[in-house]
Length: 301
Length: 237
View 1 (cartoon, rainbow over the protein chains, first blue to last red):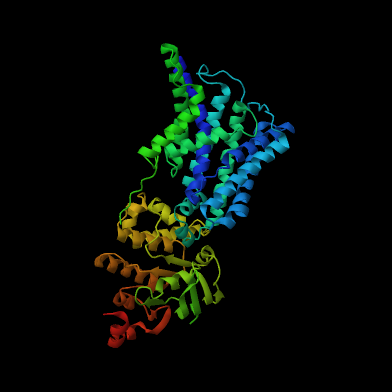
View 2: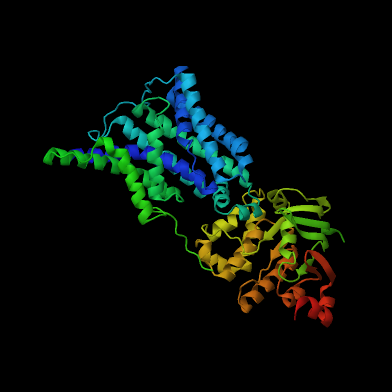
């Protein structure tokens, strides 16, 4: 039982990262119908930048806002300079651009910082607190920072005029232009914000998976699984989906191990976590293509 | 009197297909003009051309300033409220958000408050629906919301694309009654596209009849309305 609770708790910690990645994917998807395959590599690159700034002697909590700002500007620039000119291009061209971005960031990181694994120190003090038997201090910090970010974004989209304009632009670009919304800039802003979310996720997960150019590959897959499970059209659903996938992968490994211990038959374990995540995606997409929380908007005509 | 809107030699293209040929229109400050004609005559295209939503040639002037070739959002910010065909409300935003999104670029907070009070006084039903998703409104309510949203831009000119479309006669009467008040009280000039010619001619002071992308007839609304020959050959009633 102790172990079960611990597995769920650490699943939530991983889930927080998947949820962030899922949200970054959804933010771009809802306004452009594109899945940014480079989202994970962008996050990885941000994590490297953060590490570099810290190597120069700055504290993590000063480095993170700097890197977030840099990622935001880079996200905006990528949309304005690379994707904006392609807004009428067929979807495959855009996919190729995403794969290109992925490779570029991957090679750049390897070229600048080498492909050897680096340690990324946890920014959170090692303090004991209630329930610390279940979660390490970094995991708790990771969950808190992610939740803070998610609530911040929610408040931005829900309560600010700019957030409202971005939602309008994503929902109906034509009508948004007719109320004076600069739709192209809203898309760029969405890219910038997605890059910030990725940067936070990357720096939060780096102490866990260590710093190396491949660090985000499987995390992006989990994030994508989370987004699909929750509903790729629903930001709230994607976040929930990320947490669900995080907990599920741990539970499956836990029960797999339990089964092996009691019956001696190995069915499933840590090695199959990722496959199971993808099987879940397929099941959800078959039974409920909009995802668990996908939007079924009510319309009367 | 100064012309608020002056369109001359207007051409419009969808890809390589030309949809408007040499359309000329003029709208006085505070006036209402209507574009009539059959389906496909180019009425909606004219509105879309004025708003920069299609590729155009010729000249479009708002208050003497050329606006042809500008981006839609910039034209809108000059005070042009377009109520599009099919209403274009944001179905998954609430009624309140639909109204607020139109004011996101406005800095005159006091005037925004006044416009909001005015709009909710014109269409009190929207006050009851403020927190409801716009997609759940009835057709008439959505049309009211679309007009209200355009008003929240604080426009000098409203372009209305078939506000009566698909609505029950009583609702249509109500909406046209309010449009008349918007014109006379809020001093918003209007360019109205309508299938329902009789209704449009009651509201407008000047009418233009379009046929296959050209203005084939124009004149004072009262004259057009009383001329049986025009009615029969162009307006079908």
